[in-house]
Image (cartoon, rainbow, N blue to C red; front, top):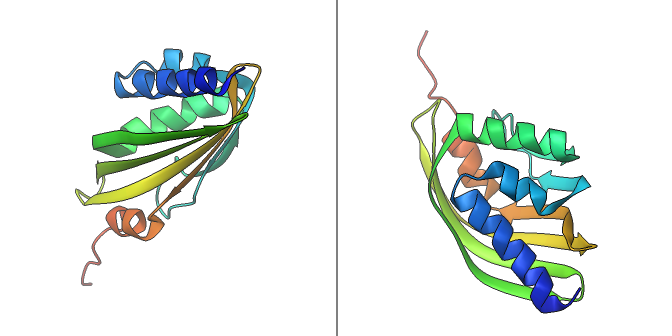
Length: 138
């Protein structure tokens, strides 16, 4: 596929996520998708996953644990089968009521017109703080 077509696939994935269309989002991905999100303490959706079933669980847990108030892909950069997206997000952790904001970078590798690998980079310290419950005095 051309670089422009790869960007179109990735844009379609973000549009589906933004509208809450998770089945549409999953259609942009290969069946054996390798999905890597950094580990965040107390966030069950974090960490690596593989395959669409695991990704379905990821999005379910993400929706249960965070209220994403802003998710904005700002720039799409492509070379060959790789698309890099730079963006920003803001979210509130439902269990703690704590919010955080972070810039992020998503790196995707496409194969046969589908996203085959996804890796996310963001401020994990901010997310970890938001997932921490306040210490209680005993």
